[in-house]
Image (cartoon, rainbow, N blue to C red; front, side, top):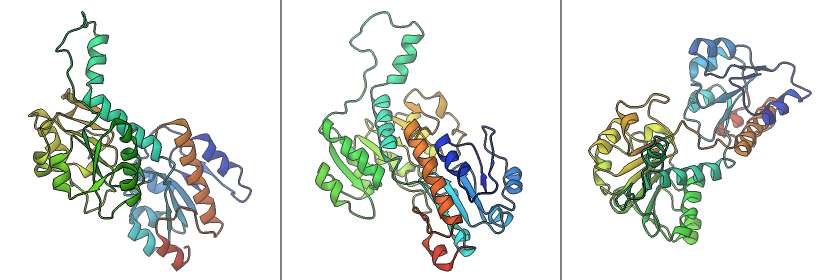
Length: 326
């Protein structure tokens, strides 16, 4: 089997100590493999532990002819062509649940950081510009008692909403399906996207990336938002039209944005890095010791189950299982 990049020790130990694994190959370089390197190194593998930075499409699957499973080290799996995998009888797994709280916590960290101008104020202080308290210094947005809009009310979106209760916030959410548990716990109200954008002081994105959600937030949607509102994204970058967001931030059409993901990651849209009203993180929503270790253990467990002819605990494409592993 092949691990496309080193993951936390807990997951690797599961693979290294498995008595029925004859050969384990790990990319120990701290970088994403090039396309050609990936194609070469998946050849002859019966299982691959992949990362969200690996584009696993039909070409990769054909290079890995005979592969039974791609175990993704992520809850999202937009980096994998699920249809191509299913057609080939290849199982695909992910790591849901364990990163919910870490991601929800980071969404709130971004929310506070951008609203209260934490990064700007920190830089100002470090540069020796702080000469004393001033009544107009770094005025930001209030959080308590404001309206929080959740786009995508799955595990993570619901966890973000639950954290708002202590701040006495009104919660709106937009999702194809109602979430009665979240409604009961937070008083959330399900609305259409336009209503959410118009009424929210903070909009936090937690939807999956697919053809329906790509550029879900574009120029039109940004223009619906309050000029005092903030946009937070810890889901996937292409959900937002990043160029349109840069323009909205530059012209103060919205007050600010907190981003952990980007449309053409790791590249940023031109001008984004120069904006003081944007807080920018390098895709670290799940980056806690416990969370990343549990993700690695879950991916390893999924991988071994598939190789042993067992249904993996976190199977993304059950149709492939019904068809029988490759």
